[in-house]
Each structure stands twice: as C-alpha cells, then as structure tokens.
Length: 159
Image (tube, rainbow, N blue to C red; front, side, top):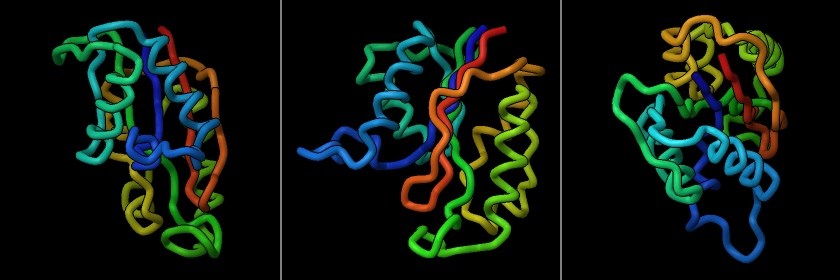
C-alpha cells in the first residue's frame, strides 16, 4: 500500500498557478508524489483538502478509487501561525507543534494534538484519519518548508 501527504493550500489549484507560480517547488513536489501513487487513490481530507486533492489527481491523470483502496492521498498541513506574516500571525507554540507533528509523520505514526492544532490553524483532519492505516513506517520527505508562515509537507510511505 502507498500513501502521500500534501498540503491543502488553495495556491495548488490550477487557477492560482498564473504566470509566476507562487508555490512552484511545492506544486512540483506534490504532482510528482501524487503521480507515484498510481491509480484508484482514496482522498483522505477535509472539504478544502478534497478540492485540492481532486485538482492534483486530475493534473496527474490519477483516478480516484473506492473506500477499500491501496493508495491514499492525505491532505493536511501544520500550523498557520509560524511568523508575523502568517495568516494567523505569530504564535510561539507553532514551531514546537510542527516539530512534534513532523516527527510523528516521518516515523509513520501520526500523532496530533487536535485542540492545539485548532488553535494554531493547522489542517489536520486528513492527518488524524491516517492513523486508521496503521503503522506506515518511515516516510520519504519530498518537501518540508513554511512559505507564507504555514508549515507544508510532502511525504510518501509504502508498506
């Protein structure tokens, strides 16, 4: 089985690409990882993440599957309060939250403090639901950055 985590940022939608793509490196990482999933992919996300996930699947020609799938596209991201210019402005707890969440993702065992995630504007519904997949093993990290003060990851697992 395979799983990929991408952020649910609207900047990944095709209508935001424009002449100068504000997230070109992130978009390239997402498209590469999503294409790697193959076919019959199940999207695990909140409503915004579903929209972004569908756009990425469409852009790569990957088909969606039914609930008992063998490939999962998980959409979620860390805090949106990592700097003064972040959407939620700076919250001193954001970096520690993202470090803990990122470490659990890298280990393949997502662990989310849902209450703190909500306070820090982290989109973790899809990440929380990843736990249903069991122990994923170590992640391959394709992208780990916080443009615009929001923590984004692109990770892959195969188990």
